Image (cartoon, rainbow, N blue to C red; front, top):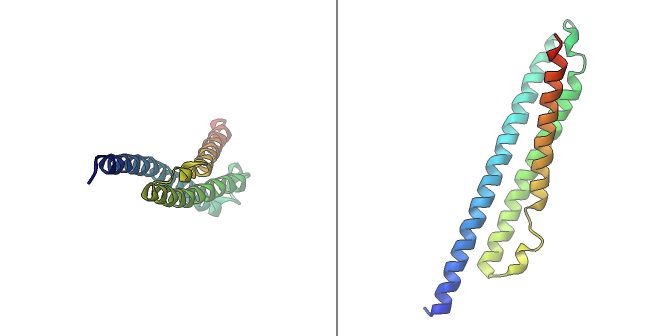
Length: 133
């Protein structure tokens, strides 16, 4: 193999490793958000049986809707990350720099940020509601 062929292979391996690391971190983040939103939504749904007897559960539907929206966004981010990873890896395989512009993971990152924001707002809303008890 020629020297330029070897350097191209090394560059591809380095970029491939970077893509794997980046998408791995993003997939772990999406999984954590799916787990957090799903668990919180399940906890809220389990409290619905006491809805008639507990006046403090008056607006629990808004909290359930917030957790559901965050769950959906995290699921969409997971799908976007998987698709973006495939596009990036294909670009690495073909040595095509156009695969990186625009970055296919931008929309997934936006979904993750919004999902985290919803989670934080919902948790703060629950804490604010129950801090006065």
